[in-house]
View (cartoon, rainbow, N blue to C red):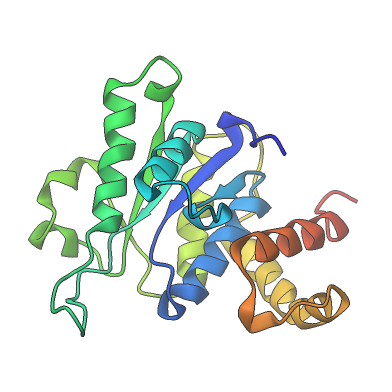
Length: 207
């Protein structure tokens, strides 16, 4: 299956644990409801592919990037913070700075849970104007909608309207999973994205 168009692809760089799950689900829905395509490392499960190579390939294929940097707390087992998200943000910014003409078109949104918190641990990204979501899916949806709206000529409904549609989708999700023989709490990225796309087709804003 061919990859989505570069101009429509949004790379989501975030934690893939249950604690962040509600935010990731909201981000994916918002991206698609705005007319774009969500991409992330979880869409390809190939044990023969080196993870960093997969990330680089995804970054290359995406004009847009959403980068979550809120996870700075030390891991309970190792006592060390996870640096995957800042690393992938660096790869994205590097592609924009040193890539070809198409790569130089890249646009990114940096997310954190609190405003200005990044200044204490990653002050070099100050020019990227990180946006805060306060760990609230509705706030994250609005931030993503407003960001994407500035990079498209098409009209996109307000963040509040997309939040309303997201609530409707979540209510419909259990029945959709049952019909597809899927378990709501155990959806992989591709399953969830396919269900989002299906719901949006059946609930198009254009009547």
